Length: 499
Image 1 (cartoon, rainbow, N blue to C red):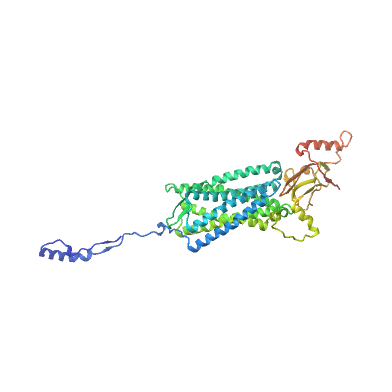
Image 2 (cartoon, rainbow, N blue to C red):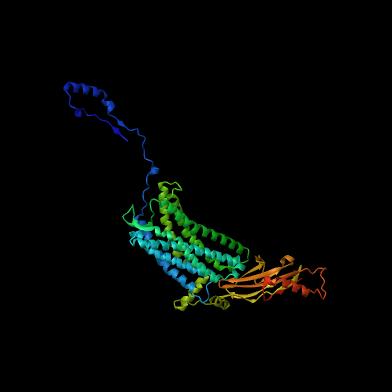
């Protein structure tokens, strides 16, 4: 603040010449002292308190983003329609994982439908009105949250099939999966309701109308923090934690089984789908979290950081929208079953007329690929007994295409099948602890089958009397009678050998 004091003798009040000359003489002595500039107020501008400049998109970036959204839409719409057609085009009931993948494709279609609106908004501003602003925002949020919830359901289903096969067998997974799909859409709709706060309004830094969340200024920070924390926790952090836990345990279990990953070919597609989702949407979620912390003053920031977060939200939002066309590409390059089914559909409509030469040795395998079947035990286990120190092999025969994976359980505990042949379980140097209920689970993408039997391990030492009243057969009858309730009626075949 500057204070300038200047006295002009010409503007002095009219006095007599004598008095005036005396006044001028006296004033002249102090004129230099009174005519000064005061500049010692201590006031200065604090750059941290100044408002940050508004983020604006340059013209080249506007054209790039608009063209990008258009290309993604042109890829996502036919791609996800093909995925839905391929998965749904089957005469057999869909297994839970395929059902979840079908709904995941529907969620990607919802996201694809929003792309033309966002492309137009970037180029011309939001010209569709306030109602469509809310609808399009809710559809985008619904697609995001339903996608991550369906991926979570897939991870839980793979965990049950591979790690908890006994429990999965007892429940009717195919009927439960339909109920789970309904719950996922309901929860996703609830999590997308904050999209109702989005409105179409004039931007402060441009002449265009924008579609963005808008709260009451008096409670904007509280509403923004509450809605975003709800979506971050229920719609991202918790499902991500469940997925990481389920896949971590599942992969660990597959590593304990010889050829586990080779037999579980569906796991490769599912892992790629989950990785694609995280790569597309996790950066955007992290950017939104940073924006939430800045807006609610939980984290101090300066203008460069504020502008960096605004740029990151625009870039990561575009990356998230790219996810709507990624899954069909993953299926096309990784999913063998998807490619096979897609070629079958093309042949039915007469669009695929290519004929590849097939050798005689591979004709049977090609024929089995066309007619995939669920596992069926052609030879089951039968209750048996063995003496201590003897060796015995539990053997089964199973049919199905692709070849089912076999998981062996002893009293509901998964056994390590290293150095074991397919279709059999060797138990060597039997001990009393080896007795109990043995179960073999056969699994492929078409379904599951189970065969169970009870193994009794008897001590054939000197203290055993085999008289008419206490024969070996009577002991076996007593052993099997005591565990029959646990085993149930388990039929089938069992191969036995001893030293």
